Image 1 (spheres, one colour):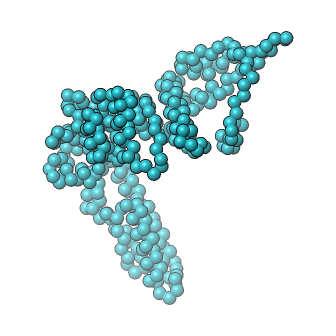
Image 2 (cartoon, rainbow, N blue to C red; image 1 turned 90 degrees about the vertical axis):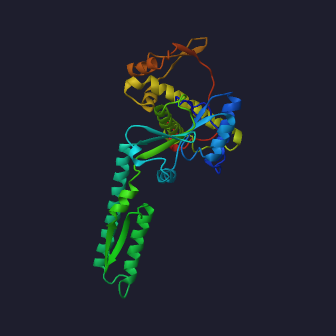
Image 3 (cartoon, one colour; image 1 turned 30 degrees about the vertical axis):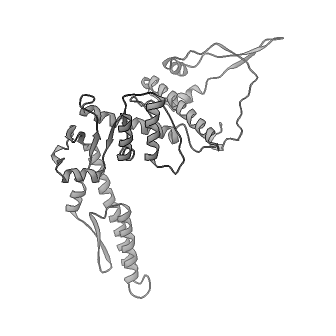
Length: 345
């Protein structure tokens, strides 16, 4: 759970067979009871905030911003609540029965979907050409006659069309031993009608947030997605989890969240240095210390002056290295051997 700036404020672990919507109620109670919040607007995607979750928010006196599904958009268009002319590059708003619908068409996203649709058709066309060429070159394939090989080719092409979810506007026809791909242009235009279109729904009053604010806060969900991606796979490697008990798992995830907070701070501090956080940490890994021993006495660790690149990183992060450190005979080890991919060279 993140605040409006994308900073994680809480992390919670659920069993793997728990649905997303079942995790929502505890977050509402956490904001209300543990954090003592009185005015909160929860922002979640269309798979997280549904009717049951809206009821939980209403009971707590909280508001929500979410997106509605494509079938729901179609239903609102059929009912006359929305009109296709309202979908534009600029944000538009419609109000109905105390709810606000914020509409927009993203032309960049529409272009991506159109390109994806064209790529799907091209991929199926390649398969059709390959199967047709095979049938032409192997007239006796499959034994006497050619019914079975043609049927096998048809099955393979139709399976790919289904896998790409292009059956609404792509179909295959057979002419003898040749396969032909047919695109229904009218059906394709109907499928592309809502490309790049999305509708947000909120119960926030206009006095609390304008339509642009509602739109921008929903777009801020990308900060949550970045947090998940960075914590799970991109850098911090939350998984695989090598602990077994619930307590240890919670502790492991908490440490990863705290590490992500540090990473966000470093990302902001090093924004003007034209390097990634990973590159900066790799540079700082070259820092070392020298053990200085006093004859007949103790010892200490002296920190040499860092190289210019490392000095710039430390200065940007407002970190000042000490000249010396006490030398403690303490070793930190792990209980298990690290896999080879994580061992230092």
